[in-house]
Amino acid sequence: MSFTGRRAFSSLFCLSKRAFSQHLLEPSGSRSSILHSKPTGPEQTARGSLEFAEWHNGGGLFHRTASVDPSVFIEVGAIVHQKAVIGADVHIGSGSIVGPSVSIGQSTNIMYNAVLSNCSVGMSCVIHNGSCIGQDGFGFFVDKEGNMTKKPQVGHNAVIGKCCMLCGQVGIAGSVTMGDYCTLAGRVAVKDHVTISSKVRLAANSGVTKDVGEPGDYAGFPAVPVHQWRRQSASLRRLSKKDLKESGS
Image 1: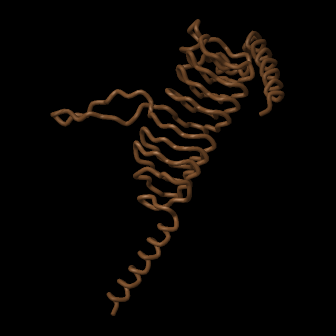
Image 2: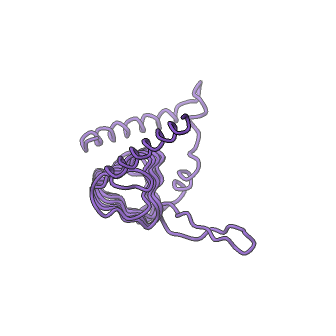
Image 3: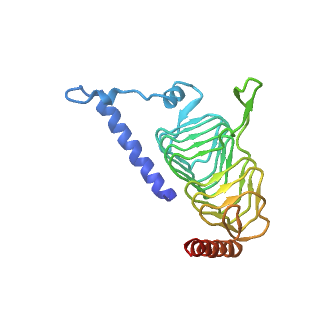
């Protein structure tokens, strides 16, 4: 949505909000009691705090210590927490939570019900509905009795470069560093503490178990250059056909 469009939407929202408030002041009559319902959950908690205020552009809530560009659109139901830094022309959808000290670059679009914490998001990113970024890493201790105890961690420590595309069901373990212009097709898995060069493309269902130091196309588990994977696949097919013939003779 353009900045002009957002301003227009904001104006329409303010008008509709004023009309809604006037409607609440009218006699109840046949109106549903749902009109008098109060917000619940994190939004109710934030509204009850003097440190949060309603953002002028969209009606969401922001912490007074957050640095938010005036052009940002924060939809109703979204919350921006303390010391967050939000760049120009960012759109934050309803239900999304921007955690403390999170930074979001210019023109990034965060859709509905996303949760961001312990992270820094660059410019012109698209974060889809329900995404969770910067959450606690997967770490546990097993004590002498075999009981699992959570190992405290702060964020996931992954770094993803600019202009990367991560498709459905991609899994990236902790402390992975990925360069620019990378594409990870569906269900690609990346082992922890691995570095992936810029301009790498990984085919669907590939598994990265060690550093990928050269740009190019990779496939297989473990992932190898795609021409090598094709030769391996062809060899396996030939061996399978040979085994079938020998077993049938």
